[in-house]
Length: 296
Image (tube, rainbow, N blue to C red; front, side):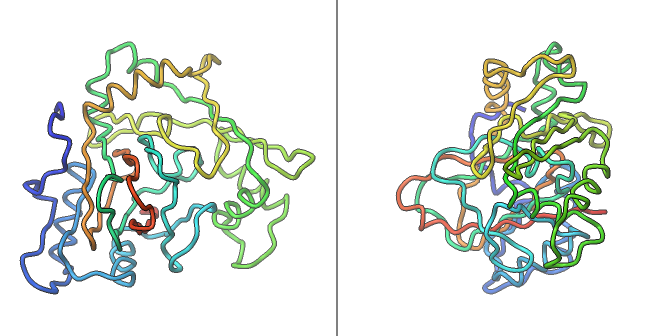
C-alpha cells in the first residue's frame, strides 16, 4: 500500500491508546500487541503508566533471550541508550550485519523531542511487493558483508553470544573461533592491531506467513561501526546507485512515528525495518531506550 500520509495512524487497531489515567499494560493489551506483531510487524502503547522496569517486563514477555549491541551504553541490565548522532538514520533491521540479529526490537521514549527525530517504519513485505521483478530476483540469493571490528567490539559481542561464557569472564581467541564456527557463512581473522577482519553471508529476504519481506541493514547506519561493504552472491559490489534506488522504493512505504513521552513500540525485527528522521534542536531533549531479544 502506497504511503502518502507518512504519519503512523492511531486508527490502527495495534496502536493501543489508553483512555484511563495511570492505566497499566495488562495481559489483554499484550495479547493485542502480539496480534499486531503477527499481522503487520509492530504494535505501540501510548498513554499507559510507564517506567524502565515496566518496559523491561514488556520486553521479557516477547523475548525469551535478551540481546545487546556492544557499542551502546546500558540504561538497565536489559536495555540500552539510543545514541546515533543527529543526522537522519537509514532504514535497517537491528544488528542486521551480524549472524544473530534479534527477533524483536522495542523502543521506549522517556523524553520525546519537541520536533523532528521521528522514528520511521517500513514494512518489508509491502516494500518487496513494490519492487520490480529484476530487483526482487537480485536479492533472492545471500549477500556478503565485510568490515573490520575493533577489539573492544568483537570481544563484547563474543561475550554476549558465546553459550559458555560467564559475565566478566575474559574473552579469548578460542571463544572467538567458537562463535565464528557456530553459524555457516561467516569468517574472521585478527589483524596485527587485534581487530577482527570479518565476513558474513546474510539473507536480505525473509518469509512471513507465506509472504516475502525485504528486511536487512543495506540502507542502514554505521554510527558505531566501520561502514560495511556489500557484495552480491556473484561477487559484484552492491553500489550506491543500487542502494539509492532501493531507498526510493522504501520511502513510499515508510511511516513516521511522532513520539510522545511514555510511548513504547515493539517491532518484528525480521520483517519491519526502522530508521529515524534528523534530530532538530537540542538532542538532549530526546531520551530513547532500546531493548531487543530473540524468541528462541
